[in-house]
Image 1 (cartoon, rainbow, N blue to C red):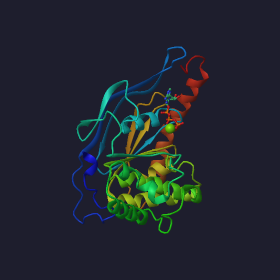
Image 2: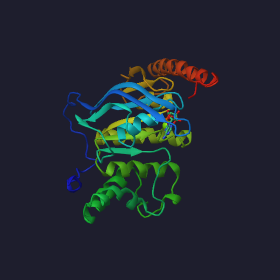
Image 3: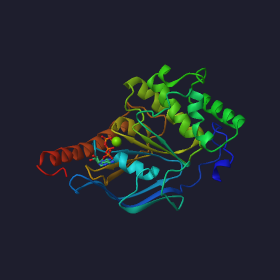
Length: 287
Ligand SMILES: Nc1ncnc2c1ncn2[C@@H]1O[C@H](COP(=O)(O)OP(=O)(O)OP(=O)(O)O)[C@@H](O)[C@H]1O
Ligand SMILES: [Mg+2]
């Protein structure tokens, strides 16, 4: 079973060789999702005709108005929801359920309150029957990587929000996934912790070069993090524009280039937010 596959050491520095040419990791074609309502048999269209290719090693931010279908799209990639039609594949293999190669990180942290930091991080490894010594080595590496030294034996209730989200990140990384799927992971953190966590995430990304698909409401966050921003329309989510961010990292939020991209994304997003609000105002339009 795939669970016995050795886990690559994490946290090793990226090789000094130039980055490999981009290769597609996730390819979504004509994705549609309609939620059927049991009460009256009518449906809610959440995703419409999404075509998206995500390259190995890139950070893609999905940005869109509230309720437009971002989480639904991410859950389809995670294999937690099935599309009504269309397909999504990872390295050419159709996604038809959750898998260890896709690590999901939720806004609500979703940690096990009765488990310590270390045992939260080791959860997926236990499921995959990785031997205890190996689990310990991996969780120790990850505790270092996410900056939780000294907290291995603490329980989630003893940690701040930022620290809990570090555990969530480490737990997802423990399976050595091909991609991290992050659903507004820093949304509940205060502004300072949020900025700090963005910088931490980039440091971890520089060391692991994991592909990241990151859902956020925050245009500022997306311009700071992303290689590409995929701006989604008001519900049902479809791809409105894709913005490449060519600014080298670390990015300066106060720079004119940063401001120019933020402005552009904000303009497109506002257009969609207004459309979404108009939909809600129209009687019967929110089916
Ligand atoms: N399990 C479900 N059953 C029925 N409808 C659902 C379900 N999940 C989502 N929806 C509907 O699909 C639409 C998109 O929801 P989704 O959670 O994907 O949006 P979102 O962009 O992530 O929103 P937010 O910005 O508030 O997180 C909404 O109208 C929501 O009510
Ligand atoms: Mg959501």
